[in-house]
Amino acid sequence: MSGLDARALRYFVGIVTEGSITRAAEQLNVAQPALSLQVKKLEAVLGTELLHRTARGVTPTEAGLRLLDYARDILKLMESAREELRSAASEPIGDVSLGLPQSVSMVLTVPLVETVLATMPKVRLHVVEAMTGYIPGWLRSGHLDLGMLFRSSDATGLVTRRFLDESLYVVGPPGAFPVAGRKGAYRCGSVPFSTLGGLPLIAPGRPHGLRDLVDEAARSQGVELHPIVEVDAIAPMLELTARGVGHCVLSYAVVRGAIEEGRVSAARLVDPPIRRSIFICRAADAPISRASREVEALACRLMAELVTSGLWSADLAGDATP
Image (cartoon, rainbow, N blue to C red; front, side):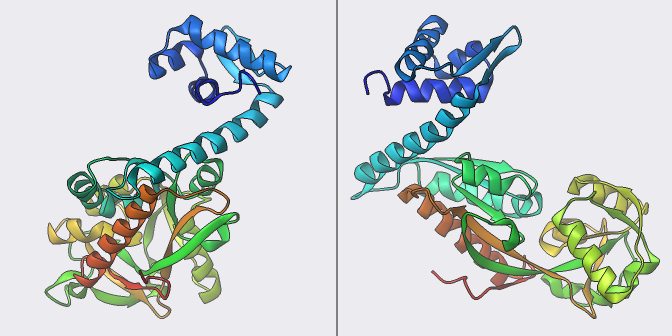
């Protein structure tokens, strides 16, 4: 169909993403009149209006939203084909976007970025830190190539691989929990889950995967929890805990540095143990490039190394095989 080419689709996606023709022109490094002309040609070819134009910017019409889904799929498929053909006999090439929950990002992002830069110089990695509620939708829409989740129930329309099962810890100010060992997570002792019932808690607000997990365990054990404040960001949760304001529940990988610095103390929750899984995901109906496969494999290798070194209190799951 004349006029419906990759360039026009790329320009259209850029405009909708930015919500402004002016901003899209800057991002795409294209003159604004040329960008507007491409949209008008698209609308003429398709015989329908694609954008609502207002003084505040642009938004897609119903037809524009439908075209947006097709355009992203077409562009992604073309990019994957280009990357596969270019890199079939050499190194991986192309863009890879990875969505990580905050607690995973705090541990994995730095070693992953450093290793990608050192070993995959032609891969452009984009790490997105987000609440897990957003990651599945971004994977299905094509905004992300790869992502990590804590619950497979959130993964409708995704290919998932359960990689880690990690323990959760109650974290308190210095001295709240005794040191049991000398290395890694083994320096922390354990306390029964019912201990949480007697503590003032700093908890993430609902809905939140970690909050839901702890609340479900509390209901099943008949333990009444006492959140005194809701905070969704890990850094301020730890700072408030270090100052003695309350206690929080987090994974050891997140609090390890604060424990080693003596800012907080922690104990693993047992009776029953509270654990969560980490799933690596991608869209089920989208092609995956070689660069994405290489980044996924690298992320898995780095997580496995963190577990075996004791820096991440977790177990490799049954799906954690090459």
